[in-house]
Image (tube, rainbow, N blue to C red; front, top):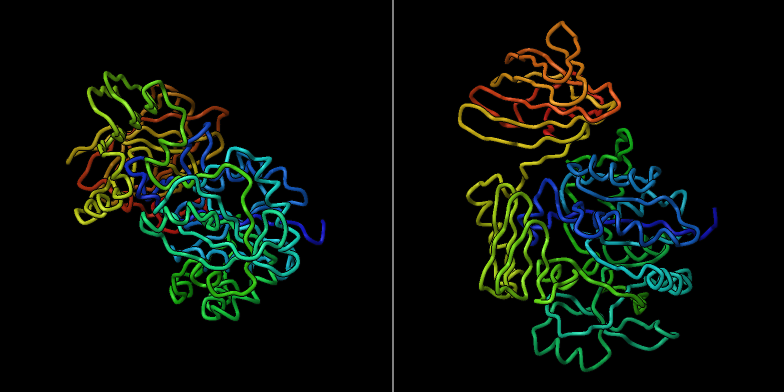
Length: 478
């Protein structure tokens, strides 16, 4: 491996509340297949495949997303990736620091490419060219920020003012600037000296840690203690919650980039979009003749300039303009396209009302497959379970519900109490409350089960685990 290989560090945190109801806390936007059938995480990995001297990536994500992240990495052939699990979100500075400390001993002089995973960049070749261009100044000891030449007065992005030119498309960075008001953004656009801050950075591990020691030593010390006492669990590197809670939450911009004198700016020679809102998704997608973006089963009459998404039923829209209409199995959101930045305020109201739709879809992913809630009732609940070949649920019991299982497709291996037996299609069994049980798919095709739960409580926290292939704790509901 080359002395100066590049290690991509993917920051996969955040709950993506501005893309509710498609994005939920349990399944956020970065893991959704929003474009070309791949998630934003997967597309971020795809665009760096052609970088030479590429180390396996490091992904920093919330511990609740670990199985989804691991599966999406596996699908793209990145089996050697290192996944660092944050017990809670602490913004980008602690996330990047955890990754840098993990790389410190073996890759101290290598380059670390920090990549948020909520961007859309379709011209991979030009993006890779910009990274290659930045390598030289990064290896000379600079912290390189990638800026995007603005094409409109955007008030939703931070800006970087360029200073003295170091070479073509490479500058000293003069100043980081907060999200401006409209008049200021218009001035920046006219000046030609200000770039949107993409949030993408390149530097050596050694340079980053040295500068962080100068400007944010408390974050460095807290993260170093976390790394010293991390626990390796399967393919995951777990951070102790009680240690991570001591680290302050801070962005990489505030903690370091606004303070260092080693900052360089490279103009990103590629298309770039931050997919932080429904209006941004509308702009990024292919439109019809009426400038509508249509996803799913949608019929329109006299509708223009709108983003229309249907997941589970027909969506019929007539006589409107500039709307975002999102339909899922359990929620419908209608918003004016110009107000999409305020979806998070709507989500906060739902949180205050303790609505489950903030956190969960009716379809929930698990390491063994997924389940879909078909019907909810005070006295019973019906689910459809899909268990992957070779996968099995934990050996568990429930105190407050019984379960009836009907095999729709495949062959199930069932443990109920002291008995283990096989079920074929159209066969069923009953699991009483308080009895240990397990469901396993030993076949080569997906196992499909319809589960009818009866009892007094159907929450996922009514699970007592005794054995688990995926080493989940008894408290975890994922």
